[in-house]
Image 1 (cartoon, rainbow, N blue to C red):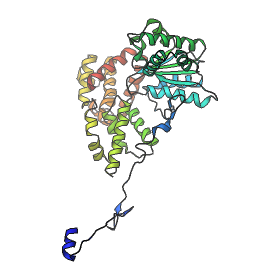
Image 2 (tube, one colour):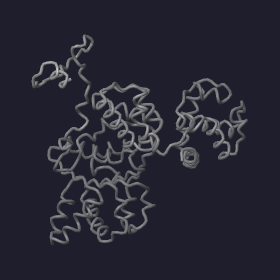
Image 3 (tube, helix red, strand yellow):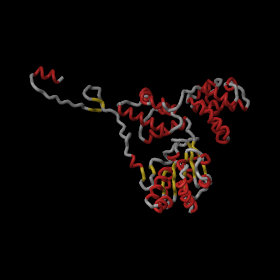
Image 4 (cartoon, rainbow, N blue to C red):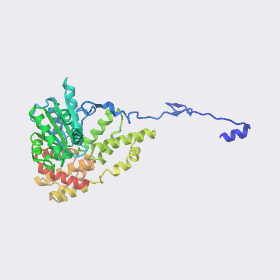
Length: 391
């Protein structure tokens, strides 16, 4: 354009231009102002309490409760209300990666800080405890280290599985634990497996871990996963269509952090491309994330086949009208897993099981959930079928 103007005028010219940004673009005189998400890279430092090392965002109010974590949350609330005064000492919370153990652990600390006028809460990880202990030895400063971890009302230690095979660290923690316990102070621990499976820990330390209450957190079901994503969007004051949270929750089943990471990626994609969050955009933005989530496409027929093999009930009987206890029980498990894994509608599940209505499917899902709470053998069997289907 500049060269053509020079040719036409025979003079050296300079062209200055600007873009007028406005809310409306319909008149052709302005570019529509893009919608931006300003909170994608908030300053995380404001969320932390420097004294206790707690993240202020980890509270009981922000924790989404489901059937997978009800007992763990109830025990955590009880401990936070009366630290050191219940039989839940120590409280050990175990479960897989990204299921909310750290959230509950820090929620306990934040609740204690909120309730007590002069609280002394200390949060650490087993790795940080080990590093600080080694540093204390090297600097001949063991007394300061001991005081930091023992001069507290509540000690919170994350990921104690990393104490395995670290004998000196275990010895130090054993004495720290004993000192706190004998003075009626609260200890809360998290680990990725049941303490009895923590090989490489000294027996006397294991016995201390098992002397209080041990609770587990399981992978959340579909409804809980959706609720977690909706809660996250609500906290960040974002409007995410339900079908998009359902898309993420259906495809990422085992890890809450991975779900939240997918949500952040979607928001970033929407912000940087100046686009509204729609289903086509979500599928484009999350194509790689959902593809590597470790899940595979599972149909209701796949569920029926797996349940049939695992529970030794013919497929025809699973979808038939038989009411024998073993057949009806297996059918309920198949309906439950269809809802949990396939994530399709209640009506569609009912159609696959002899044209039953949605209320029958709801009843089956509730019945299986209740039975799994009471019967550990059933829970293990259902978990085994789920693992086979998903992986």
